[in-house]
Image (tube, rainbow, N blue to C red):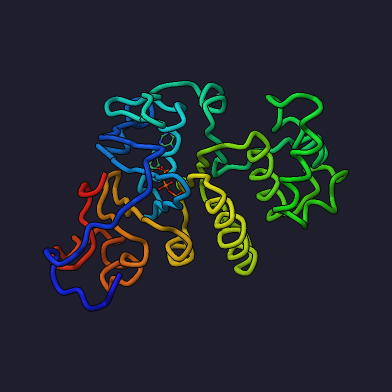
Length: 268
Ligand SMILES: Nc1ncnc2c1ncn2[C@@H]1O[C@H](COP(=O)(O)OP(=O)(O)OP(=O)(O)O)[C@@H](O)[C@H]1O
Ligand SMILES: [Mg+2]
């Protein structure tokens, strides 16, 4: 990520960890409306990978297609070498994928403890309390609110609960759709840098979609820019963030090919 690089030929190919998730040429959409076309991406063990792009670019659609919630018209989703395309979301949970959708995913009439218990539905009765304590260590703010009805939590606390609930089953791959949305800047920073960063350090592979582009790229190892349903650019997150043409690319401009960031499709 040196500023000294001058041409693509001099750019050493960045090494990425062993791939946990690979998405190949994925096309998907809603009913008769195709939204994403031939999208490709990869997430390695312990890697934080960010998908960024303008509103409506298809970021959430990619995640939903990975999660088997949408019809996939072509392409493949591969987890640890196994083809998981079109596998139902509940089966994907059993395979070690934790997904926190953009729209909140908690039971509002139940308490924090009850939400976490349901999140751990695959654990034995005896395992749940211990795992709950481990998860709550990541979310000290929630730890003091165990008996609170989830519907009475603040927006940020609900976000944390949705993430905490997903962690109960110790996912090996976490897919997060805008984990920092609606959080105050300081809390957004904490969720991304402390919680997401620490989870990745523990070996979890993390794929996240974020509106806060700079914040996301600063925690990510690798980034993909999605525009109008297609890959526009990818590369080491630091390199993407350093590009002066990043804002222009978001608006649909072509990346400058002479710049030293790996072009889309080069590193899957
Ligand atoms: N349920 C749906 N039925 C039909 N079209 C949809 C549906 N959900 C999303 N779309 C359309 O698909 C396109 C991509 O939407 P998507 O939610 O994937 O975008 P996004 O990149 O996640 O945007 P944002 O940053 O606003 O969350 C948009 O044009 C959107 O209107
Ligand atoms: Mg979205």
